[in-house]
Image (tube, rainbow, N blue to C red; front, side, top):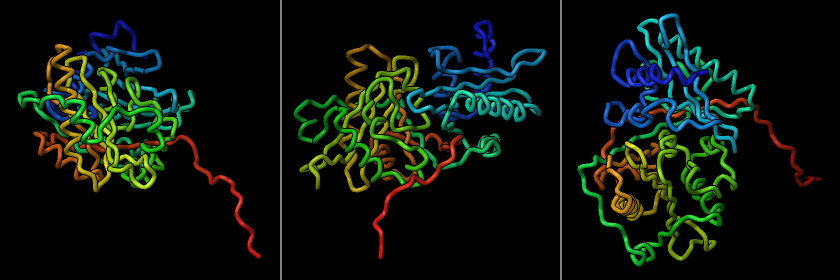
Length: 338
């Protein structure tokens, strides 16, 4: 495990691995390029480190040549690999594979149910994790709105009410679960396995729905909003959309995540979310380092609505997951047939 005395070496290792080089390997998150690379988001590997997170290093005689950092979500017994770096033209691949294998063994001992990772499909990333037993289950587009583009004015309460947008509450858990089920393919629902209790934990410190950029939310003030269906839909509680906004507290982009029904207009959610960021940065005196938004490929046309608001696709990343439990069919009673 990493020690506090490794701090300087880890910071340099993390920085080097975010630069394009034939002798370094990283996950390539959140996008390629120095302006919003992993090192700029997590400026030091031990920064904002929590007691339940893990950081392991690969040490050789001449110093540190690899690191892996894991965030543990204790309510769901899930681990997320957020950084995996190695240096060495010939040894980098082997170093990273050993680090991943160590994390899987350690997680099995500590009762981890699922391991998540998101990576760019480059430098052998996807092949590495599939060799370790991970399953590839989705892709995300990472869209970025540069800081030079002016943010729209915040919406008034009357405008938000007219657009049926309001803050999310715990009582929306069932409606949010139905919205997620209406948007997400069944194989992905089965793998992510969200429960009603998970949707009740909206707000700061919780990062549902999952995305490749969810780890940056620990450095942000998180707010969640919903857009009600006109008339409440068939059951009176239907939601047409969900909006998660993370206003950055550190030197990083702000975060925007939208979940919406395919037939719903997401333009009001995009404009409202940018207005929330505008209001928080004006009042809090925070710097604007742009806005980054992850959109899964099956969530179109949300990506086009974001592009209309000034976002541009910066990168595409792959989502992978490994389960350590075996799924079995639950016994059930069925009507007898004579």
